[in-house]
Image (cartoon, rainbow, N blue to C red; front, top):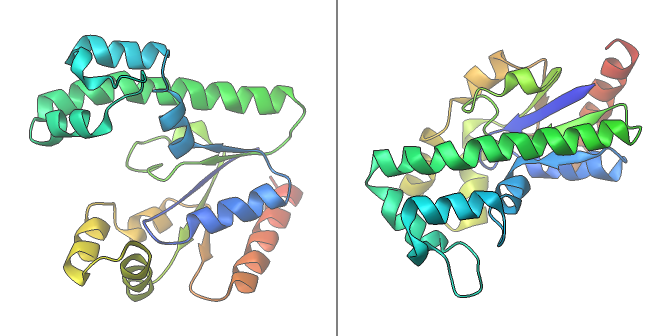
Length: 198
């Protein structure tokens, strides 16, 4: 079974991902893969260099994220060009890791994909688990975690799909407003249910 784990900014998805790792589940982490595919020497980084010029590569061979960010910031065409290079590479690498875990004998693989719905990647998973928090809790956690003013935090939250839409698309919703122990209890119940009745 392939479980898609997602949530919204500051909903606690990373905490749940860590719990799953501690329970021994292999996790394919989309954010980590996004960094891996542009490491020095990769085909993807070479394509970025060809598309945007050698100045977007640092002396150590890594991608200069600030320069790339500045190029795509106000230019939708450049942003699309970058996404067209990076997104397929991320998807290929995620599928490669997923296959490697399955080939290694794992029956359940977790795909930790923050933008699962936004990127329309539901087809990559069998079940979707959404980690959810109330808007007040989300705002409070984001302001505390990132040291943001309320307006900035609200703008970041607004840039993602509303939590209600993600909840509607989920097979199970994990309510992460309570304690860590409460979250873990819910997680165990959901896993137990899915493994008994896939």
